[in-house]
Image 1 (tube, one colour):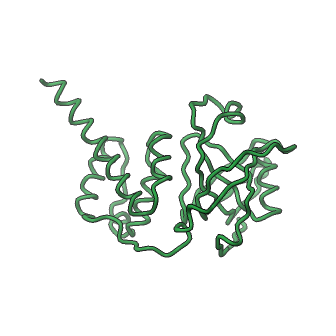
Image 2 (cartoon, one colour):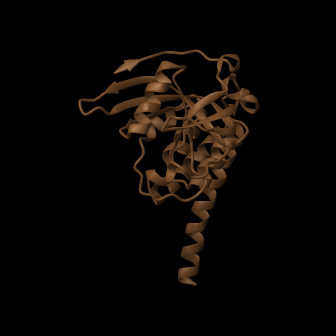
Image 3 (tube, helix red, strand yellow):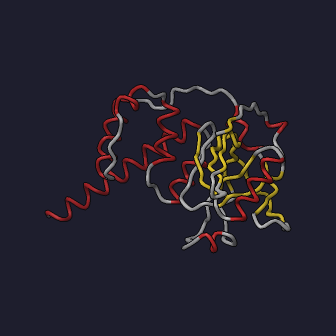
Length: 225
């Protein structure tokens, strides 16, 4: 697999990028997202990105979609996250296995009509300069309490976690990995994406976990009352 390293500032980021709408898929700044590309329009999107600044805008549909055909013309949320192609491999059956690293969130200004099969948009980075700045990495007020809640939540959704790795991870890595990897709804993942900064994202994540845990307790209470 070919790998690349990049440094970015807002000044070097373009104001137009290809969009990759995916249902219930979240990319966050500084996080990595592996993708398997096989549809022609996304193979063309990858080739286009590779010839330009290697940026692809990950964004969620804002309405329920049943298949990839519907995604092609579906309404989208206005905020997504641009990922830089940092590694890729072309398979024998002409697929691309790629890895994106989240660079910065963006706001869609308008979609651009194009001869390309994939979607393109004019975008703005203005509201998200904090994504490429060094911020305080202490995000969770009570880490032990959060990990206790996380154990209850992960057990509820049937996930076996590597607790040694969790305990050794930074607040930023833990919050972002849970946000990206756990089965939240589109709207919940969008709320995590749109959180103003890492601290707010941590607060949103804790609120979501609390809500899911408490819903379970409420159901049990109603069952036995």
